[in-house]
Amino acid sequence: MTDDATRKMQFLYALRSKGVTDKRVLSAMEAIDRGPFIRGIFAERAYEDMPLPIACGQTISQPSVVGMMTQALHISPRDKVLEVGTGSGYQAAILSKLARRVYTIDRHSRLVREARELFDEMDLTNITAITGDGSFGLPDQAPFDRILVTAAAEDPPGTLMDQLKVGGVMVVPVGQSDAVQHLIVVHKTPDGVEYEELRQVRFVPLLEGLGKDT
Ligand code: SAM
Image (tube, rainbow, N blue to C red; front, top):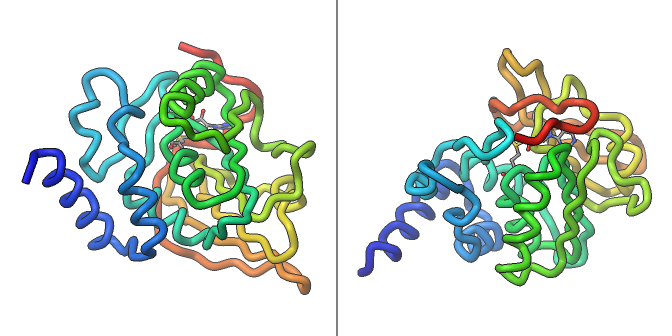
């Protein structure tokens, strides 16, 4: 077996052992190589199950957390998905393998530009990456079947909830940035909203306005 094949097998094994069992999610994560989304000295650690630094003082999330969040969304191939927090673009690339259309938004224009370059190189034509404040969602494209927030909010954001279809699912880390946060799955039903708590996590905060690029 080549080094690459062994590394991929270990990567998938780590995901399964941490509860990522959905076959469609695992095959999307097998199809999208995390390596290109990490630049510089951390690139060689791309296949370890840990968050890593990216540009603009941000992070690419831990693969098993990416897998858990994606799994919790139960995405169908017809779905239109909004991701808030493009970061490296890795999560959006995985979503693009599962959904019809993906919109991803980040407050750092540099991150959006670099993610777009990777989407083009990988021929992921169903992703639109936008610079902006994702806490306002994307009213022009709403409503969404699924919404994924990859930065921690103090509460599930009401504006995003309004942009979620009835029958839709939103996954969002909730809590203060310096405290324990909980990954919350929000189901919007005809009768109201149901919340399910998945696990504890640690994410950078959902901030307002546009970020200063570095
Ligand atoms: N999903 C990313 C990936 O696959 O690499 C990781 C996201 S990183 C943990 C969180 C991202 O949320 C950062 O890139 C940060 O700039 C972004 N962010 C924070 N607040 C935001 C906001 N209000 N609107 C848009 N993006 C925001």
